[in-house]
Image (cartoon, rainbow over all chains, first blue to last red; front, side):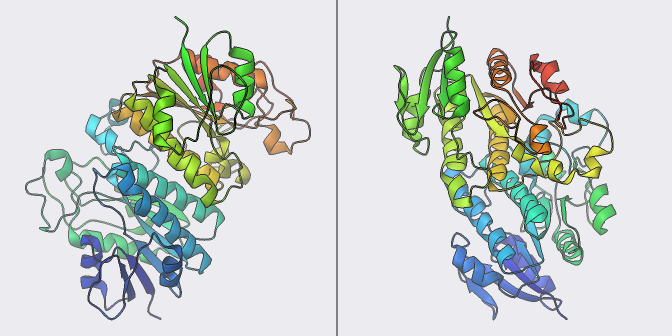
Length: 242
Length: 242
C-alpha cells in the first residue's frame, strides 16, 4: 500500500524539492503556512495543536520541515514555530498513531565545533563531528533544533514514535556549492542527495531513534557520513572538492 | 570583595538550604515567585524579561533554580518557566554583564538510561552515565532541562557567559534516602553535599562550560562523579549503601 506522508513546511525549499520528485511514490499531504497549489495541500499553522492533530490523522510518517529557517532568527522568532510548533507536531503524531517522524534538524545544532575547528574534536582525524558529540548550537535557531532533537528522543523512548533527526547541511535553490565560503561548502547538500536521505529515512521506519548528518560527499567534510551509511544506506551521489 | 549572587527560585528547597547555610559568605539576592522573608528578597516572575534584567543587575553569579520542578509536569507547565523563563534569565545575565550562571539541570535530562539500565551504556562498568552521553529525557520536565543545557552552551560559546549545568539527583526535605526506591536512592543528594557542589561551582567561575552530576556518594551509583571531582573538586561527604 502506498505510504501516507505528511510534509510540514511543504512550501519551503526542501518541501518543494521533495514534492516535485517523490509525488508518485507516496500519498503526500502537504501542510504549509501560506497556500500552495495541489490537491492534498493544507494551509495551517503548526502553532495550533488542533490543526496539527487534523493534519496528522491517517498518516504513516511525517517529514517535519516547518520552522523559522533563518540561522540568525531571534528568540521571539524561533519560539512559536520551532519550539511550540515542533511540540505540537510530535504530540499530534503520537496521539494520532503516526509511526514515524523525520525531523529536520540542522548543522546549527553543533555549528560551534565547525566554527572553532575545536581541537578537542578535530585532533583525532576527519570527519569527527558525529551523532554522539554533545550539542554546541551557534544561535537560537540551533538551540531550537537541539530542543527538537531532545523532544524527539523523549517521544521515541516514551511515547511510541520512531524518530529520525536529520542534521541538514547547506542546501540552496541553485543546487551548487559555488559562492559559499569554505566551511559552508564542506556541508553542501545537493537536491537529489537530500531526497535520497529522506526517502531512505522513510524506508527505515523501524529505527527507534537516530541522528544523521545530511551532506553530500564533499572533500573534505567534517560531519560523519559513516553512521548514516551503516544504519540506512545513505551514500551521497554528489559532492564537490572545496 | 564579597561575591554577589542572585538565586532564582530562592523559595524552593535548594534555594532555602542555600540561603540558610551560605548567607554570611555571599551577598545574596533572593528572587522568588511568592514572597519570602529577608532584606534582599525580590518577588518576581522570570517569565518577565524586564524583571529578570532588574534582578541580574550588579550580580557576579546567578544560581538559576526557578522552575516548575515536577518531573511529571505537562508541556503547558514547563513552557512558561522552564523554557521561556530560562531564556529570560540567560539573556538578562548576558545583557547585564553577569560573569557566571549555575543552571539547575536534572537527572531527568538523561533519566531514560537509568530507567532502562540501557545495556549500551552500562556494559562498560559503573558509573557510566557521564557528562558526554547523548541526552535521553524521561518527560517534558527532562526535555526542558535539555533545552536549558543547550541554551547555556550557546550563551557560553557565543555570548560571554560562563555556565555550569548541575544535573541534580534526588534531594528531599527530610534529607535522607530512606523511603525511596532503589534507582532513586542511588541518586540521593544530601543538603550539605548540594551546598558544597554549588559553592565549588561558584568558586569555579572561570569554567567556560561544563555539566556535572549532583549526587552524594551512594553505593552503587550510576552517574559519574569523577569529572566533577577533577574539574571543581567536589567530593561528596555523604552517601548511603542502597
